Image (tube, rainbow, N blue to C red; front, side, top):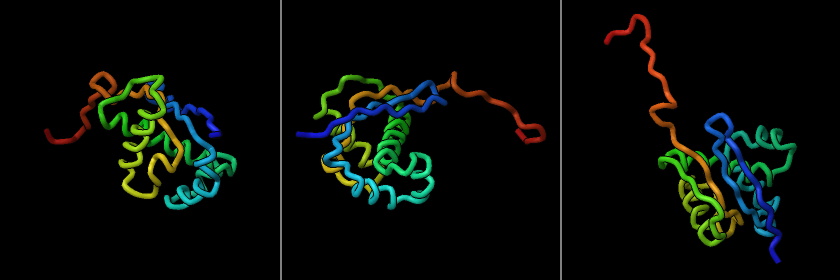
Length: 134
């Protein structure tokens, strides 16, 4: 029997972007999470931010990358995605990293909900810089 738990990762700084991940803790073990975290620079910093819980670090990293990818692709909005479809979405996120992550089915993370817009015209402002040539 799988040890499934659900987590939400939020980026409240931008329109409350969020992703909900279903995590199989039988697959995402502390050993695997340590390997992933150690692959990337600033591993110690991330561990301090999550009270030395390396599994939480990896879930948070994955959630951040999911939100980032959703924004890069023009925004994603879906909910109650099946775990099979969520696993395919998770593989898209893994593929966007290029390296440092196992296949989604080995990682044990499925993306079941995303609400993340991309930056649009109304989200930005234009200001001229004094003394610049036009």
